[in-house]
Figure: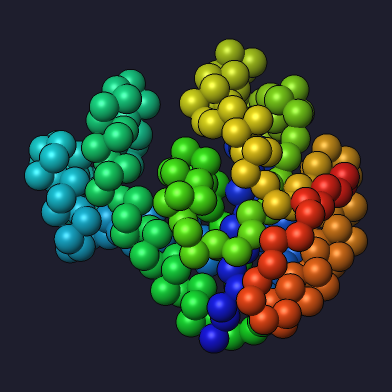
Amino acid sequence: MSSFIIAITGGVASGKSAVSARFETLGVVVVDADVAARAAVAAGSEGLAEVTAAFGPDVLAADGSLDRAVMRKRVFADADARRRLEAIIHPRVRRQLMDECRAATGPYAIAAIPLLAEGGGREAYPWLDRILVVDVPVEVQRERLMARDGADAALADRMIAAQADRRERLAMADDVIVNDGPIEALEAHVAALDRRYRTLAGSGPHPNPSRNRMRA
C-alpha cells in the first residue's frame, strides 16, 4: 500500500506518457487520469447519467456510450459547457486516482494527471506529496503537434493555448524534466528520480525538499 504519491503532469506533446512508461518499467504503479475520466462516464455509469441530464441525449452514441466527438466539439466551443462537464467528471477522477494510488504496491505510486493545473492543482489534490512537471518550450510543443497529429501551426497554437500557461505548471512543480532533447535521455533522469522518490517514501513524514530540475 503506497502512502507516497507523485503526480506527473505537463502540457500537450511534452512527453508525459514517455516519462510515465519509463517509471512503469521500474515497477512503479502509474494510475492514468485519462483512463479514470473514461471510466467516470462509461456506459451505464452514474457519471454518464449526469452528463446526459446536463447536456441532453444528443451527446450519446447509438450504443448508449458517450459520443466523445460530439462532446469534445461542445466543450471546445463553450467554456461554460466545459466547466459543467468538468464538475461532473473531475471529482470522480480525483477519487479514483487517490484510491488506486493508495492501494498500489511498492514504496510510492504515480498519478498521471495531464490537466493538473487546470483541475485545481494542489488545492484540488491535497493528497499529492510531490508534483513532477514534464516541460518543453512552446515552440517544441508546436513542432511535435504538427509532426505527430498533422496539425497546422494555427491549430497547434489553439491546442496549446487551451491549456494552462507553462508558467502555471512550473510554479507548482517540485521536480522538472525539461524534455527538449532525445527521447533516450529520459531513461537516466527517470532512474534518478525513482531513486529519489524511493528515499523520500521511506523517510517517514514526507518532507518537501528543494526543487529538482533535469534536462533530457
